[in-house]
Length: 115
Image (cartoon, rainbow, N blue to C red; front, side, top):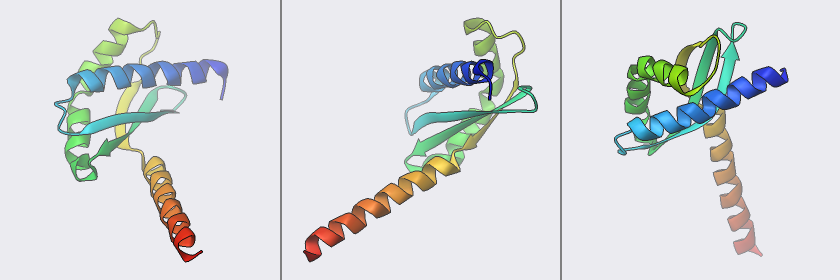
């Protein structure tokens, strides 16, 4: 991935974090974790996690409804020449990493109690 692509990803990630933080009704915590650039940067998938997890469906629906406004926000707040088509998704990789951390901590606590 080129430096230009990395910079674009970071700009979109920062703007998404600002935008969704401002637009959220605070019933759940939406954390933007990554941006995937697809189709030669014509599409950008914004990945995020949601706490509590039982609010994921509502958060995805909310984020999807906000994409038109988010595109306008990106146009207003950045100098990106060609704004990509945005889509949103839950970051499954981050969820799996968090779950592995949780399991690791539990197993390390179990080992300490055995000793």
